[in-house]
Structure formats: C-alpha cells, structure tokens
Image 1: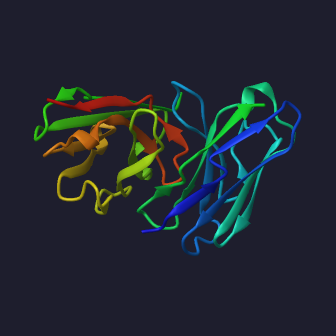
Image 2: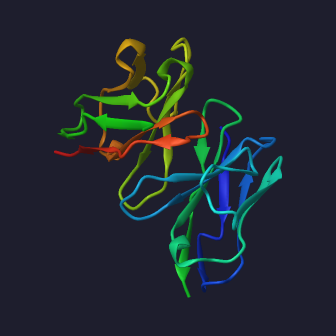
Length: 107
Length: 115
C-alpha cells in the first residue's frame, strides 16, 4: 500500500500570507495526486487533480506542483475563506490513500 | 445538477450488518468508477472500497476486506456497500465519491457501531 504523509499537521497563518503544504508518497505516483479542502460539517471539495490541474471554479490563488514522490499545494495569498483542513490523495492505483491532513488556522 | 446521495447509515451493534446506498444523478452513471471513503469523528479520510465502471473489478482496503462488498446497479444509478461483521472501529461518516480522484462527493451517511 502507498502511504501519504503531509506536513505540517497544523499551520498558523494570516490573511494575505503565502502558504505551502507538502505531501510525500511512499513510492513513485507520477502525477496521480489530488488535493482537497474540507470545512467543518462539510464534505471535502477537490481543488486540484493530476498534481497541478485546477478544478473548474477553484480560485487561481490555489496551485499544485510536483511529481514522483513529493508534491506541494500553494495558496498564493490566504483569504478568510481558506481557513480549513487540506488533504492530499494518490490515485496511481485503484487502492486509493489519503494524507493525514493539514489544518490551516488563523494566526 | 451532478449529485450523489447516500443513505442507509444507522446505529448497529458489533457483529451486525448494514447496506449503504448511493444514488447518482445529473451525469452518465455507467461511465464512471465509484469509491466509498469514510471519516471517523474528528479524524482524517480513509478509503474503503472502489468499483470499476463496468463493475467487473472491485477493490477493498485491508481493514474491511472479507467483510464489506461493493456493487452497482446501473439501471438504478446506484452504488451499494454491504457491510458485515461490523466493528466499533467502523464507526464513521461514509461518503460516496465519483472517480478515483474523487471529483464529486455525497453528503455522507453516518454509521455508528456500538453496543
């Protein structure tokens, strides 16, 4: 099974900050990685798939990069609506796996 | 509107069974793979099971293999998760998701396993 490790687990930031979240895979997953945002009481929402493709309707301040085993999600200028938990997920095989999550909180 | 609606979650005793359903609307059901993903209260996301567009291939997490069975009925645009020999640790909100990169999520159905 492929293990996904996210860092940091919690991130404190202010509105306007540039924020970067890292996700590492235990083996090569090429670009088969998605990023999700989840707010309390809601289902996760996909932000990015295939490592860097922005889902329709997602603000352009979100971007993804990486391939192989190391990936990043960047929020270029943090907005009040962005305080949430973020998850990465690999789908190189049909046995999917998720990272443990990164909670972005207000500093 | 593209939508997935789950149902069937309930309070059940350890060792019991439940059948979850996920009804799809707003898209061509039989061309997509589907997965079940669960989230225990206050915890992260855990993939549970998946099924191919044809239904000929099914996949399970080690934690549920041999106890859970995923299936689909294209005529009813529905995905099912039959859950047997339920354990306390199966307690979670169960989401139905479309595609392996989980582009569409339902609202979830709560399964509570407790005596």
